[in-house]
Image (cartoon, rainbow, N blue to C red):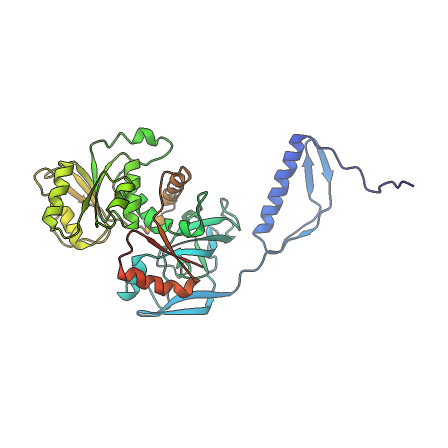
Length: 408
């Protein structure tokens, strides 16, 4: 005996109507993602020229973000504490994003700020400048991100909510970018300092042509012009070498013998090995190779090497030629030559100026196009409990071009 269904026949949709339905469903789902409780009653679903009345009652719950978290806190001058009940960083603006930390990059500024007591507005404070993770919550003005998205960011020390040595961070939406395809959380966690600093320094302050889809046309513009990078095997130096080459410049770096081959492999046209050599000898080699063609300089080591860069511009072949110089590791009170423009690189601009978010997008484009290589990573497992150990490793130096990352 056959039975007749008591349900009305399912409407047959053409392709256009089905597409419209899918769009409507996605819009409804996106509303539920950003609200912990929401009810919709009797919506109208449009199916082409036909309007099908429905009665839908949906309750959607998303897990609440906890009220406390684990954080590595600078409790007082020179002292860390690992606290398991630290307050969660809340959204204070509709333009902010909360990210759950999956990996953090470690940088010399992290241990130096604590050891020498700078960039610490108050105690307790949370440091850490770069991370990668998953979007947990977004403000109502955030449209390009949604919970669950894998992202990376670069942060500013003044806001403890943005310190990366905690389980969750809260940051402005323009500083948050999708992780490029093929990169892990650990790999993406080194984009916010080394890669971004190199990109912004060259593109914004040293006026290096930006590489993009028309990179082949750009590469010829700097023919014959050199950029001199002291510290070419540092993480920032590795990215700077590649970005400079993509921008059409010739690159000369100073490195140790241990890392010279690394610098060459990343595209340096000439590497000056510094081991056991006097400054005058190093500068003489740079002058001989570049023949007065240095137009940009980047120092990533310290005041002594920054002063040496300035002295290069006093050589016979360079004297009087305009050079733009970015001393990222500080410069002393040496006499500034009138033909040398010393620029102040302020990475806080990435956070404070919304338009600087464009540099993160351009950087992502280079990774998506496989134009940039990452440094070799050394990953510490154990989360926030091993951050101090990692910072001690950085303090000892001798990383040989490797990037130190902590996986949560």
